[in-house]
Length: 109
Image (cartoon, rainbow, N blue to C red; front, side, top):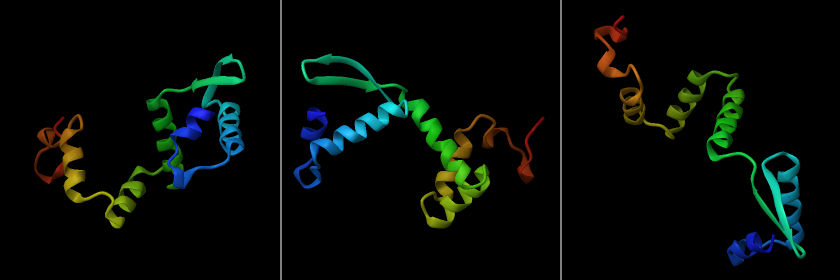
């Protein structure tokens, strides 16, 4: 806990018990696991890897849009978070992207 607290910038410093509560809640939710105890200090590590975490966030985000990736992308475009240039680059990078398309936007069989 002390290591987490010490890593925070002075202007974002919180109470030790706040960090402790957060760490214990993350452990209860399965995001952290206790590795070992050294004296009074307890060592924790992530219980899930970064890609699992991101996957969960994406699922949660899609749930906010009724599971529709089209609505999500439309919102990102409307807010300017995603540009048409970004969208075209993603389309070209995707398997079966632009190089596999014919005029009219239909895919080759």
